[in-house]
Amino acid sequence: MSEIRVRFAPSPTGYLHVGGARTALFNYLYAKNTGGKFILRIEDTDLARSTDESINAILRSMKWLGLDWDEGPEKGGEFGPYFQTQRLDTYNKYAAQLLESGHAYYCFCSQQEKKDDAEAQGSKYPGTCRAISLADAKKRLAAGEKAAIRFKMPAKEIKFKDIVRGEVSFDGSLFGDMVIIRQDGVPTYNYAVVIDDALMNITHVLRGDDHISNTPKQIAIYEAIGFKMPEFGHISMILGPDGSRLSKRHGATSVEEYNKNGILPEAFVNYLALLGWSPEGDREIFPLEEMIKEFSLSRVSKSAAIFDSTKLKWMNGMYIRSLSDDQLLERVLPFMISEGLISAEEAETKKEWLLKIVKTIKNSFDLLTEAPAKAALFFGEDYEIKTDDPEVAKYIENKEITGKALGFIIEELNAMPEYGPAAVKAAIKKAQKTLGFSGHDVFMPLRVSLTGLSGGPGVYDMFDILGKERVTLRLNNFLKKYTA
RNA sequence: GCCCCCUUCGUCUAGCGGCCUAGGACAUCGCCCUUUCAAGGCGGCGGCGCGGGUCCGAAUCCCGCAGGGGGCGCCA
Image (cartoon, rainbow, N blue to C red; front, side, top):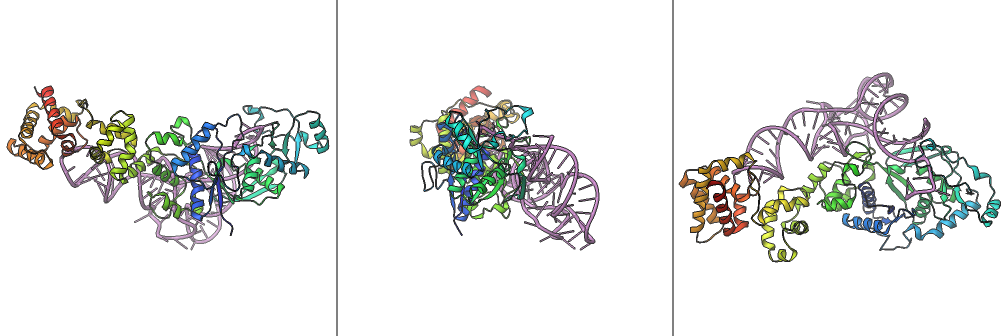
């Protein structure tokens, strides 16, 4: 059995979006699962819209996701080049062959823009230039006329067995003769994709559902040239929350945005994989390595899936919590730096302290971007006292309890020979006993004055991370402001 | 307009003729844990689009309908 070769072939007309990312992922998983090769090819034949910027963005996103390709840009490979604009001679060679064999013809019709023309919808090219002989066409070309090359679509039923959908059939006569080489000599998608897939020995074409009706056209070209046919598998689309095609108005659509929004690539990949594929059993959280082991095309869903950012967020939280404090700090630090909480240099010297912070806030956020706000409490003294929180207000109003509790602890702190968790704990216990207060009535005043919140980090953690000076400062400030 | 595809809780899905009183996950609600908030644990609510068949028996097979999505470019 020959080696399995799959490919992901984005066109660089924008960033890598979630649908493309999932297609790439499924190709990657299939290749790795079968010990095959994953090829990346850039389909840049739309000269007007393709940009280097997009190519870079796509490569960046692929790397971020961890979808390493075996052949393609930056890597090369024996079937290159992997940019379509660098393969023009090849396309021309096969076009000439199709012309000679009578499967294609020159078309001198003027270009019509029928993109937005509602009435033109469904109208296929009538085949006006089919009748022009190759010899006549060559004369006109020699005389300076411009022509595109069209493929003669056979008027027969075209069937194929889709890996995910099963038998699919189309009536070829319903398709018009498509342009395969434009007037400017650049090939069109449906043609170039066949030449490349065939020449790159692609064995399985796994792509988005939106290509399913292109497949019969491509099959016709495979047959006309006599190329070996790959297998086709069409993966359903990803929809927005309202069930329409995922678009900008639904929120982030590019992979890069998810990176910026604090999603971990391993969580994103995990979520994407489960959108349309399910493993045997009930497990939902598993690393790429295990997905590779378990991946199977027979378990890919046929129906479209709605992108649920809430579940993605949950999954991201699961991954955040599975990271060690050290790993999490590494991920979260860039966000803390960009939010101005700390500088990179300062972070170097305060690593132990930062690790404590990370540890205490670890299970209180699901996105890396949420970490700075959670950590802000530990940086600087201008944290907000949430007086509109009823629990907070309660202890501000109850000046007696709050005043006594805080006053007691301040005195204890001043008298404390050695500040530390054990001493702090003893002081709090002593406060309860001496004042005759419930635990709640000692903890809440401390919590409210130290954090300004009714929830949040543990009081002991606050004492530990803030240190004696800052704790004393916060307690005194609070007393002065609210119980004087 | 024509063609193709899809259809199980709000969402992602398991199910491939009897193991289904339809299972899991997110969300939601409740309880437990707890100095608080989370996290975590436990539990509740909630679904086979509709109509015909086939069969002793259908979420599962067939047909029709409806709804949704995609395509019909010298875009990919």
